Length: 353
Image 1 (cartoon, rainbow, N blue to C red):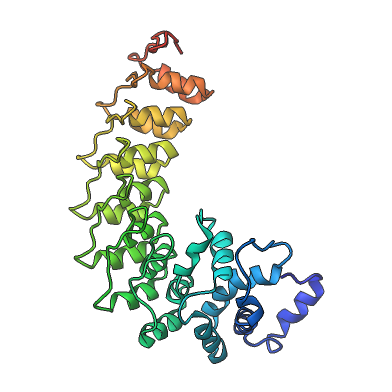
Image 2: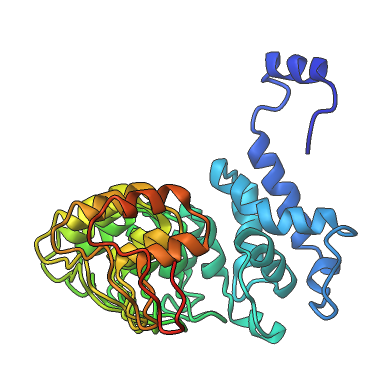
């Protein structure tokens, strides 16, 4: 919603008494609408056209954002009325489709998204605490994606909600979702340092637990350039900084592929990280950095004596070939400065750079 004319915006900004608690008001409006019989009776099949139902989409996606900012007694009561039991299927679909951009799978699976899942998703502390006290939901229940309320709170960085959930004796701290990712994984993947530290205080949490692809939290933190999370995880003895995933790739490969120079330097500062380890395709971190034109990462890796600048992969292709094919002139110039690099070496198909 936008104020059309700047003079009206200036006037309202100078008169805060007109709307003393705007977020509470918005939360109450959204929740009143979502609690209506007409909305609850809507089916997810066929899917509603968001362009034809803008209020439905807005209320489903943003009521929790307003309630988290300001929660009146009325909004709390309306929220509990909406969230007791399982959350509305139509609102669940719009919320996750628009706010998270997730692949949602089968439409009939939304019944598994409970009110506690939703409150944890938004991080509304008071509502989460009340739902737990009411004992109207399973604190470890999995939704359509296999996520628990703790996973959603960790994914979205809601430290207060994470702390409340961890106070319950029956909480499952390391319960993986359908992709094999535990709550710590979601926090690390999205760069939430506070949540990562809170979870790592619990002995039951495995900081190096891999998902179904064999990738541990460190790999995703390195891939998404969350240096703070990388440093926290590397501070744990249980974390293997050179762990191979199912594709034979290490956290260093993830960082090199995406050009994250800071993370590359942190990992190379460890004596137990092999800077020239090849993946299942025979490609070392240097090849990945060269293919994507990350000149800074290439220069950092070439400073290591044990990095072979002309190392071929399973197809006989050296880093130079990958850089040439993708037109990365800067990387080509860097590699050609090295005496070990032979620009005329053919690959397995007889093709030179």
